[in-house]
Image 1: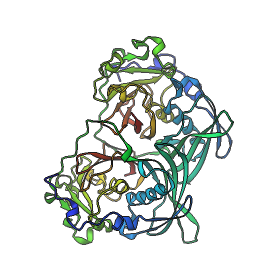
Image 2 (image 1 turned 120 degrees about the horizontal axis):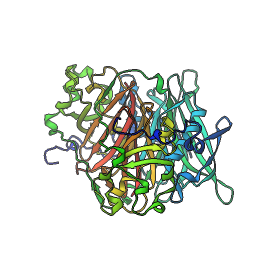
Image 3 (image 1 turned 90 degrees about the vertical axis):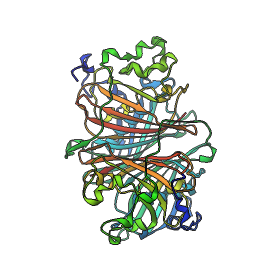
Image 4 (image 1 turned 60 degrees about the horizontal axis):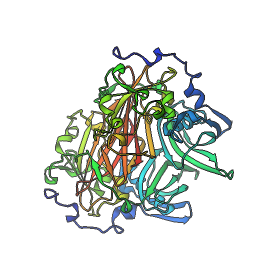
Amino acid sequence: MSDAPSCTAVSAAPAGSSEFDRDTAVRTLRPGVHEAQLSPGWAIGTALNGGYLLAVVGRALRQALPHPDPFTVTAHYLTATTAGPATVRTSVARGGRTVSTASAGLFQRDESGTEVERIRVLATYGELDALRGEVRTSAKPPAVPPQEQCFRATDHPGGDAAVPEMGRRLDLRLDPETCGWALGAPSMRGEIRGWLGLADGRDPDPLSLLMAVDALPPTGFDLGLTGWVPTVELTAHVRARPAPGPLRIAITTRNLAGGFLEEDAEVWDSADRLVAQSRQLARA
Amino acid sequence: MSDAPSCTAVSAAPAGSSEFDRDTAVRTLRPGVHEAQLSPGWAIGTALNGGYLLAVVGRALRQALPHPDPFTVTAHYLTATTAGPATVRTSVARGGRTVSTASAGLFQRDESGTEVERIRVLATYGELDALRGEVRTSAKPPAVPPQEQCFRATDHPGGDAAVPEMGRRLDLRLDPETCGWALGAPSMRGEIRGWLGLADGRDPDPLSLLMAVDALPPTGFDLGLTGWVPTVELTAHVRARPAPGPLRIAITTRNLAGGFLEEDAEVWDSADRLVAQSRQLARA
């Protein structure tokens, strides 16, 4: 991407020592039981971001399965997850030669100490680096202006106070053409495009893509919806290991009906490859 | 659809007495345990169709959950399912006021009598008739020629013998423009469009939509792939209760890479409403 200064120009944090890796770390107590400490750093308002939580569960699944990379991951969001301790319970359905499948649940304790399930997940993992075969694609990367022409969260007219906590973890640059909603003039097309990196310069990998697919402001904003758009279910396909450098993401909604909408995300890497596709069903 | 003779013109089988209802019936033995008798009538070659199996599991989930309609259903296909007895085990994650979520597994016994899991499912159900709110959609129905100008399975150059068993359960009419592959000339666009009804005239409903999203020949055929394209994972969103009459379905693939491809399906009803969306990850 000659026209795109790599996000890693900032202060490249190697994978492992980055905010993202620290905040998605899980400790396996015994087979099928993993502990996590959910960070308030990924909150949007009071709730933790669904993509961040998916990456935490994704890390637990990587420890539970014989394959390292998420190929297809579905999460159903049951109750609001808060910062603090959480337990991920994994249950392997099948460990195959090329792919393996497992369920997972993320649990937290309520005031009374009772365990409450926050998210239930079903996923199939494989090994991206083992994939062979031609690429025959008609998909095209989204047209996003160079980063220096895009809006950063800190450019928000509401000022720094208007930046959600998660915004400080990200290097997010939104295409001005899809930011009218921030100025009270949504395009009503239901599309938002932008560049995404991690604020500390940590490069993307298959796990961080699970966060990336849910990192942009909701398309609902561009459809003139006010207020948050809670995710009922999100499915992400990781199609290739992302090259170093910033990601380009386009999210679109075609059908808002009966109080629900789908939000599709496409994630492209700096080598112009479609590295992830996702769709979520959300409440308007 | 003035230009579309309703499939029910044939010999309308009311829901309940149709082949589809009989072949997807489940008997609940006790909470969480449901018996099914999988019919060879939905086979394509030796394997049973993934959409048919999803409808069987969907019926068991309807019995396990307080809400009647699938809103979002994800299935991971673990091992090939064969005709004969099967057990569906359901486990409710959360029963909410407006939606409820559960996992399910479909099991069969192998030669040695050991139970083997064939499919693992995660789903959220709700009540379509309770949905309110405007429709703000930019999606357009696929352009499919009138049914009498489309190809039926029985028009296959290979003759009746070339029609998979499942084809006899369906009234499927494919847009000739997307049938070149049947004559050895795939368009390479990765798109197939057509009309779908049930052969006995039974009208579509939310459960039959789970079959409909996987009922067309795979887009891989139109991309010049030979041989079958096994589904790894399929997620279907049911967005509205379908009106009586034939469905229009368009399936598309944009990205074939590393031996995997996504296949997106859109299902439209006779009232021009987008009633279901699905995406599957399949092996080329």
